[in-house]
Each structure stands twice: as structure tokens, then as C-alpha cells.
Length: 83
Image (cartoon, rainbow, N blue to C red; front, side, top):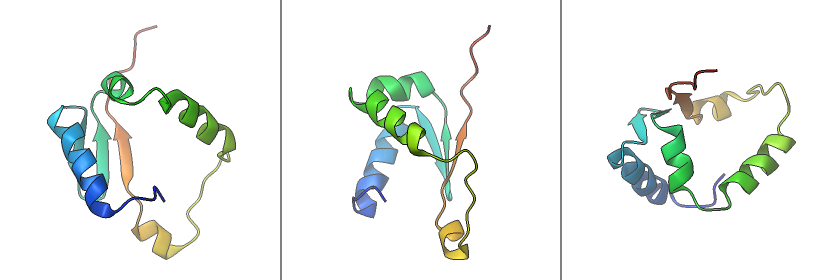
């Protein structure tokens, strides 16, 4: 989906984990510092995020068992800002 080889993803996630931005597990990535991830990303992050969010349907369902097996769950454990 990203158009890169698996070792590239492994190396990138390893660096993000070393920086304390994420925690990796089996088929799961937990975001520990969302603001840190935004700061570590390139300037195109907000543009890509807006574009992807605009095109996503409101209700996403996995229809294929094969697809469900390849899903990586991302959990955001970043504390929410106080109102």
C-alpha cells in the first residue's frame, strides 16, 4: 500500500520507536507522542493527511478475511489536550 519494501517500514518504525514516538507490537503500533510524530514528519504531512481524510468513507469495514489478517492496528495513547 505504501509502495516500499517491508525492511524499509521496519527501519522507519525502529527509528520512531527509538525516539520514543511509537511503541511497536505484533500487528500493532501505539502512538505515544502524536505532536512529536507531526514534528518529525516532512512538511507535506498535513497536505497528505487532509487529502486522505477527505477521501475516506465515514464507515470503513473490512470485507475480506485476507485483508483482515494483514491489518496493523494503530492505537493513539497520546494524552488529549485539556479544553
